Length: 291
Image (cartoon, rainbow, N blue to C red; front, side, top):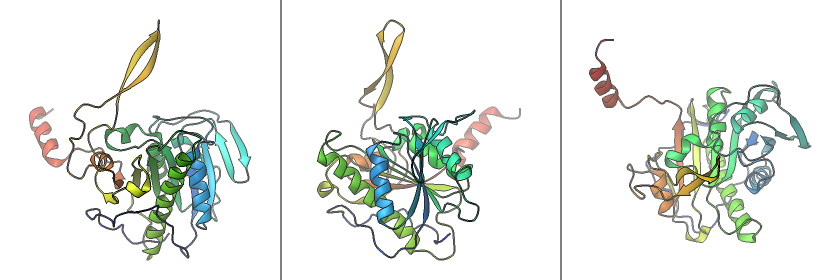
C-alpha cells in the first residue's frame, strides 16, 4: 500500500473558506466503509457517495441500527447480515464487529482492502469521548485486530435532519475525508498508508463551512465535549442525560476539543497504547515498590 510516513502534526493547514474539494487522479483504493449510526444514516451514505465519486472502490459493512457509544466492543455469536445493495451489507453487530466482519468474511485474498473508513458520525468524537466512540472503535478493531489502516470521521450537525443544510454539511465533511485520503495517497512512496498501529481521527465543528477557521492537527483532549449521566424517567427506568461538561474550554495544549470549540476542523493521529507517560509510571512504581 502506498505512502510515506504521515506529515508532522504540529502544523496548521491553510484556512478553509469553503468545502474542500477532492483532487483527481489519485490511485484508486479498495475501501471498507462502516459507521456506528447505522447503514441508513446520512453520514455514511454521503461519505459512500463521496468516496465512490473520487474513484475509490467501496464495500459497505455497517450496523443495521444505531450502535453509538459502543467503543470497540465485539459481538460474539452468530450475526445476521442483509445485503442491501451490491457490495453493501447491514449487520446486527457493533461497528468494531462490522469492521472485522468485512475484513474477513467479505475480503478477497487477492484484492485486500487498503483502508477502513468509519463515519461520518453524527456528532464529534473528540477529547474524552473518543474512547467510547463506536466510530473510532471500528478503526481500533481494523488496525489492532485486522492490520488495516483506518480513518474515523465525525461531524457536529448543522440544521435539523431532513433539512438541506444538514445533508450539505455531511457532504462537505465527506469531501474533507476524501481530501485527507487523497493527500495520503499522493504522498505515496512504497511505505504504509499510515504508521503501523495508528489511525486518523477527523472531526468537523457544527458550523457552516464558510465560517470554519481551517483544519488543525492536534492531540486527543482530556476534557469531554459533553457531560453524560443517567436520570430516572419512570420507576426502574433510566435514560441518558446530556449536560454541559465540567471545565469546559480547559484542556491540554493543542487539544482537539478546544480546537473544535474555536471553529476548526481537527485531525489527530491515534494509537491504542494505553501506557501512561514515563514520569507517571515511575511515580506509581515507586509508590508500589517491590511486590
